[in-house]
Each structure stands twice: as C-alpha cells, then as structure tokens.
Length: 96
Image (tube, rainbow, N blue to C red):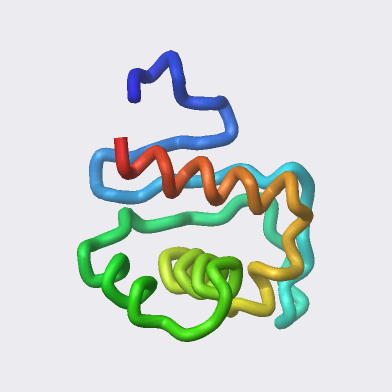
C-alpha cells in the first residue's frame, strides 16, 4: 500500500503498529474515553489462533481485533460500526 492509498485516520509506524483514529470518542467498559486505538501487526500465530477459534466468523474476527488492540471483545463490540470498519481497514493494511 502506498502512502497515498492510506486514509488519514490510519497511521502506520515502522515498528509494526497502526494508530487508528475513531469516528468519534467511545467510552470503554472501564469508563475511559478513547478517540484512537493502537493495533499491532498480526503474526502467523494470530492467524492460527483465529483459524482454531470456535464460533462464527464475526465472533472470531472480534476476538482477533481485541487481541491485536489489547482490548476486550466487549469493548470492540461497543464501537460504532464506522469505527470498527477502520479497524478492519488497518488489519487489511498490514496484509498488503
């Protein structure tokens, strides 16, 4: 992915992370408000964990996103869909 293809709400660093600006502030289950989430680059082990997990594809994806962002699956589920789509885009960006 070239720099010109990266949306302004995604910021990839050279050390394997992406900072994702959310569509709006979100209150997590612990009461903390966040406007951005940091995702680490997925590994082969993350892919294996995803493949071996039980549940629907949506449930497995949420678990993967939670693992990569060090958030709880419940907090991932609280995100507005527009912000969740940004997490999906960040994940896809690591695969290009």
